[in-house]
Image (cartoon, rainbow, N blue to C red; front, side, top):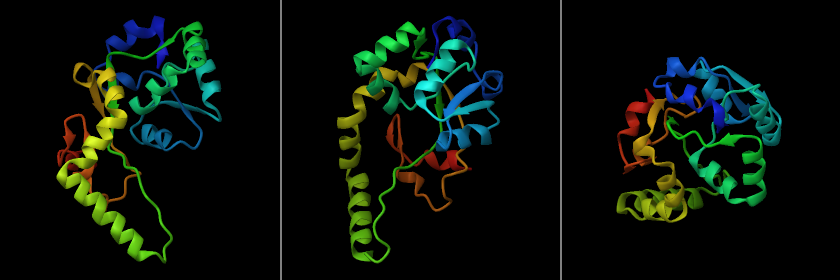
Length: 185
């Protein structure tokens, strides 16, 4: 998210080096904040999302990076949409920040059978394509609305992703792909 009047500046950004000239805003304690900092991006943190939006409107930060799975649902709320439009905040249409990340299931340490069953089921779902279909069913409209293929992609490394994370099961704009393995390095 950016201020509407900042779009000409963001339209000229094509590299990580270009983006480093802008000030991002993130929630204090959000994993994304650590990822942005690890990639050398200037960052201001705040305790609340509404405070970050006020800072963006006031020009104290230049952009508020949100996941495409976050930004569109928030804009579906009429009150949120009105507040953002009143503050001159829009979704930036030119760029996309990309880094590998994962969703995790946690079970009690003693419940090894449940952990093994969940892992086997999830692996099977990725291999037979049903996980991708489910992901598309819930998030496909947000992904389509983001027009990923039309955006300039700035790849970031994710130092929070454990080395043992099976990247071959991470989703990309092209579906599940082992291409993610390169992003881990």
